[in-house]
Length: 257
Image (cartoon, rainbow, N blue to C red; front, side, top):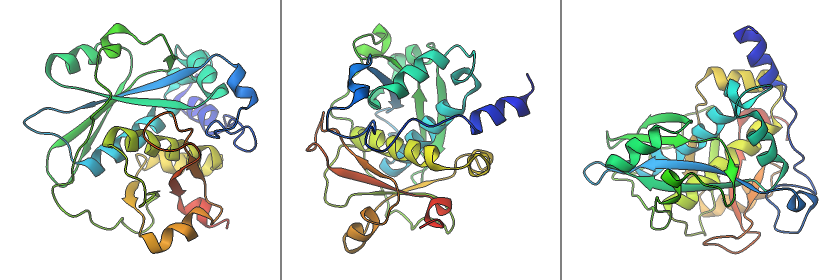
């Protein structure tokens, strides 16, 4: 099959339901009866050169999109069954951290490493892996720490460039960097599901350009009630169930409001 055929199949792939049976709702739903999977992401955090927080969030969001559009996630691809099973159940993402030998071991497992470069000049690396059963993590990933994954922005974050999709974080929620990375990934995935094939193709061709920013408090109510996709957290960690964490403000979706 040609590259063009593969991309067309990816861009027209049906999206899971996001209404009453949304994978992010806290209420019990039909998808709760399915086997549960989790999408593992690992961020590289070296003591001498940790990535900037915003760059880590943006790189994690792009990593989710890269995984969703990888040819191995579709059709007869080696990850396709796992991706389908994951999207048929609750959409869970867990971010762990690694450095040194731990990172090198993680890189030997099937997955994709996505790179970013923030204003600090320290390169950000996030590796995303195909979904695994909730209780079936590979041992190389299971031993990595998940709690305490926090980062800072060394400089004030510039406003997002015009025309770039923005994932707006709830200004009233205090989330660790790891939690916020997972939420940004959810928001990118929700936006992807809502786009047409042409809109998906354009975003992919841009390298999945996006920005993650904390919403101004005075704009949050308007953003979260605008009709744009909103991530409502299931409340497994850190925040209360049903909390609105991120709004997906993609220009193509805003144009439909």
